[in-house]
Length: 299
Image 1 (cartoon, rainbow, N blue to C red):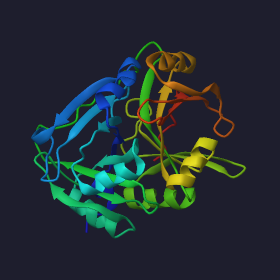
Image 2: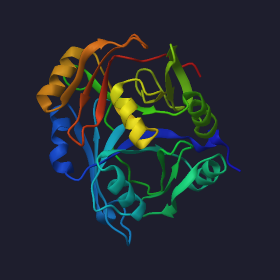
Image 3: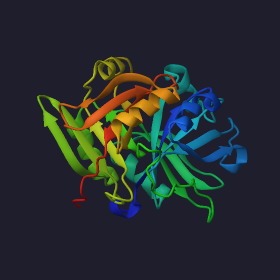
Image 4: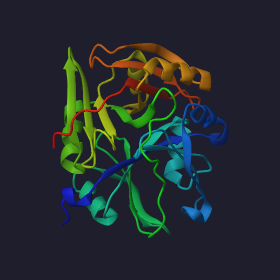
């Protein structure tokens, strides 16, 4: 059986469900983002149930991206999620070196099948639930030339903006930290903990503090918005994480681009990092903006 270290999991993208992607992507584009790819129909993949409408966008960093997916969705399970949740952060995707072995491995370690393993024209893949119910997509590229483009690492705009990952609100932060470490080979870079609050910064084996920062952050519900959303929907993917060399300028640029303020830049009492939060137009999802943050690689 293929071991977890041989599966080479690499953080790839966060998927947003949105029924008006061409309209709602504009504030992203005005806020220093770029489109890396459009995919539709057989270019990416198409099934008997539906077609694909995907837009990939990146900002500053080399690896991590967002994917905006629009209805009509390809699969019944996707349409069911849309009818229950509407606009929202649907799943995080990892690239692996062996999707078939990855599915066997995840199902043997507490994951639950959402979409069975399938071979598409350009990749093999599947979707599972993690133990708390969040979706995990796994992709293995099988075409010699097909790839979702990556940007050359270059912080964007005068504010030096970079998209670097996500946060997820957990029912049990410790249990999920252990699961993602053991089952998906994620490594803990840093842990912040105080007075019942916890923020665990994880990453994949390809992390580099200069050229390839991709963060997978697990936390308890801390803000009122997070607590309310968790009560309604359970454990969930809560924020896209950005960092900037000039947080105030990046925050001002976000408001100019069409984002809505949740709070202006301030020191987070748990992490000590200067941060701000804004809402994007795709259903009011939260974007977390941090000062430049690059923990040393300790593994």
